Amino acid sequence: MNARFLDHENLQLRNSFLHKIWPGFKLSLLFSFSSFLFFINRLEITSLSLLLILALYHFTGIPLRYPYEKIRSLFLIFSFIFIFQLFSSDIWTSLIVILRFTDLLLFSELITLTTSVSQMMETLNRFFKILKPFGFQPKKISLTLSLTLRFLPVLKQITYEVSESQKARGLEGNLLTLVIPLIIRTMKMTDNIAEAIEVRCYN
Amino acid sequence: MAIKDLVSIALLAATIAALGFLPPVPIGIIPVPITAQTLGVLLAGALLGAKRGFYAVAIFWILIAAGLPLLPGGHGGFSVFYGPTGGYIVGFGFGAWLTGLFYSKFYTSLTPLKEISCLIVGSIGIHIPGVLWLSYAAHISIYHAILGDLVFIPGDSIKIAITFFIARLIRKTLHIKY
Image (cartoon, each protein chain N blue to C red):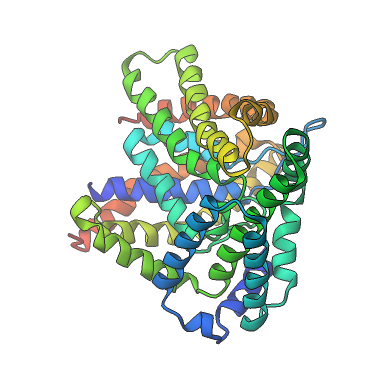
């Protein structure tokens, strides 16, 4: 999984025309493309857009094994849906359904691969700022987001410590004895962290 | 929202993410392995209540949408919302909200039976958007989508049992108020 993540990082830092487009524009493109695809039930349009997306992958310099692996991980569900549609309606409907899923998955994956996580966060943050009149509090959202990102390695450390000490007691492989101490230790951290933030005069 | 609420939301969101890293447990006959992620979702509802539980899932959504590989198997990015199982990820929020709603409603008179039914309602809440999205996006009738959804039942009942034990123990140890 780590290797996969590092690969993503490499791809996200490349330079192509898709990397340079403003992420907000890419996201709105994704939403309009998806709503367009869901209203249109024609095989030639879905297959044409698949070709277009694969061409975009090629021009961005992303090796085609990425879309291939994305589809392969969902192969079981896809074949299940395909066979089901084959029996309940005709082959054209099943092809359209599968191709539409493939289009949407590959296009959204392309956007993820050409936008770095920090860029995407920034765009989402800007989006929340626009939604401020509707009760969104962008500052609190971004504080919570960064706290969550900070807590991930902390939780990993706690999980490691708990699982090591349970191993010493001969309790390895038991989900309950791992999760209960993990959650209790995490919840007990709440007050300390909140105090630490308040002491530094946040707000 | 006070800082303490924000911190507890962040901690539970991180817990949901961390439970996704636990390796999926395959169970015998059924092709769907059990992942611990929905366990975290139910826990967020049970420990934080409706509003904060939903916010914890919302933070998790934002992190996924930003492209972090936090779902089981290292999946992430906008594409997971468009896949056939995207509805279940949207259902995480609804499930956490429902669990929290019922927990806070019966807070003063929680018996084990009531607690288990809260969790069952919550995990049905996870499945409703999942089934609706699957039937809409894949052109399957709702009836057949529900039929396909039944493969999750054994895994979900195990998860509900585990969540019940955890939530009960933790509520007693930490004196949680909603």
